[in-house]
Length: 300
Image (tube, rainbow, N blue to C red):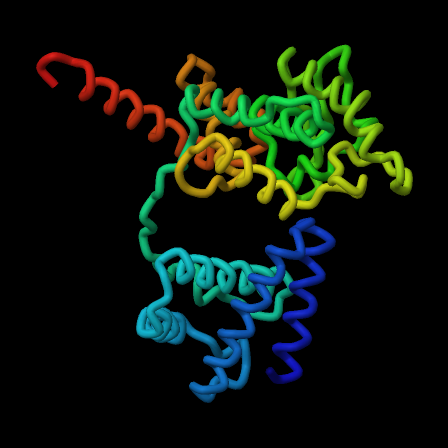
């Protein structure tokens, strides 16, 4: 990486951190994508960012396919470069974006996996018990399903973020944007019992803090901890496969749409900036309707 590339990469990273509020996880991907392209530039004898042309982008695209990157990875890399050059144009360092017209590979849309109501009931039954951890696990499951929040949002909930009178929680989503999510009486009862019984017990020998969900030592629960708990519940409920926490978010959205909720409301509850991110769930509900029709209609 030469001095020019190093300077503008650092400026771009700072721009994403300060102005875009992107997570460190997202920024790592951008950094890696750009460093990969800088290596390609070196191999092709392209010394300056200002001399990159559309034809160079096409050549890089061909090389990515030759290295057998998935369509999703190729699309992400091209998107990263398009954003980088858009930033360089904003800084008036370049006049054109060589990646602006570069066509990205069409991605296969994989329908989100979700739980049927019978499967969810089995999961809730797997939380039965009066032990502190069982009470916590039920509260965790109830909140994830009742609100559709991301696991990263869930583990960062503080006690002061919860309003039992209005049954709402303030969560911080992507880009540190706050939104209010709702929960019903099932989640309310489970949460109240957890906070006043189980959490108090689990925190007995731990340092004081205000994070809602804690592990068996009373320390704040992590993303990995949530995944571990949910997979243990899957095993206990005798359900097949591994459970990704996002499945509860998918289930939340799918069940709302199946029961008549409008797309805009679901979009707001999920915290999606774009309606297109929410529209994938309409395909899920249509597929569910199709399977039901094919299974039960006499002449299907």
